Length: 475
Image (tube, rainbow, N blue to C red):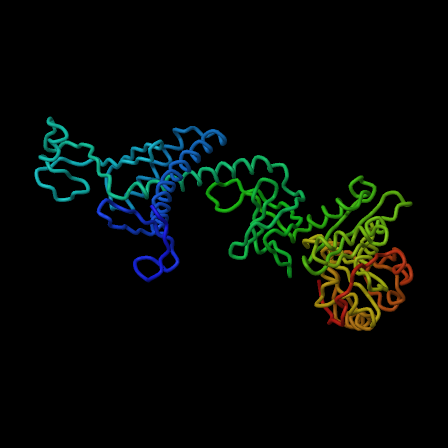
């Protein structure tokens, strides 16, 4: 045998290697090595695919049965039930159908129960008496008998169906295991890695489990790319196997995420020296937290800020540069509201308690003209967050607006207070001018603007100009 090269166009391509065989008659036979190699590769690929199909099915069956502690009988029953549905759907079978599966040889046979009749009208449910006698000599008209009705090409459909059933069983078992493993971890913080995006939702890998980050739980302005890691807060564990998707549901907007991040970064909070009393968030934009320390020698705000602001900077970095205001909590609601409205300077606060309302009541906050837009914030964000933080409904008024409202009340007919409401106020020069008859207004202390500036709060990372001029608003 000699080796040659194609020099003219024929059955082969120019440059392809040829093998030359001589015979006794002196005839030389040329054949393309490239063609032979391709044919061998195709044949080898077909054999390998069949072997892989059998191996994958057996491996999946063993894995789900042994590792996931599911009886083989249960898996076989599930697969046979799915194959019956697949047969009826793909080949139009009706009536009572049974599947006989041999996973070792990847052999699937279909048997249907049919009525023995003289003349067949519906071949799906009936069999001719003559054909039935070939299988059973004792069969009579009107008897039912089982006949093999395995259609051509059913093996491929059966193999795919069996694999899908096994994978579904595997997902169900994993869901149960994840729900059991994370049952006591709801409300905790985990770091997850983005695996993929599905219709706006983010699928993340949290430990050995998959977690769902729904679109509604994603922070405003955040983008998620495959391989990136984020801290997430576990909000729900779905135990219903009928629900699609991962069992864990996580969030990037929940206030608990901010609370857990500060607990992680501030040792004083983790040790109980500093207590994080309240959290208010508008995820992706701005947040406020209220902290308190029982020991008067401990500065709770400074502990959260950290040396050179490194503690709060780490939290802000994890939140995608979301701004965080740290304020000092106070048992006095008026003082707490004053602190919560920082960086605005408050002149006085009047509290109107209303036990019939959802919250404790309404707080009327009086500020100077140049502080009103700062107290309200851009699109009402500052006063809205302060209301969430304190639980009070907050009305921001300037001295002039408050004076006009009091004058209208003074000269209006009637206008008594609700019997379920009580009024408390920080003393102000305006109280003596506009005090109404029948109102029980008791001064509980005076708060100067200097004291508020020094003791109330510290606002951090305000770099986007949120405190622009706004309009009078309610929160």
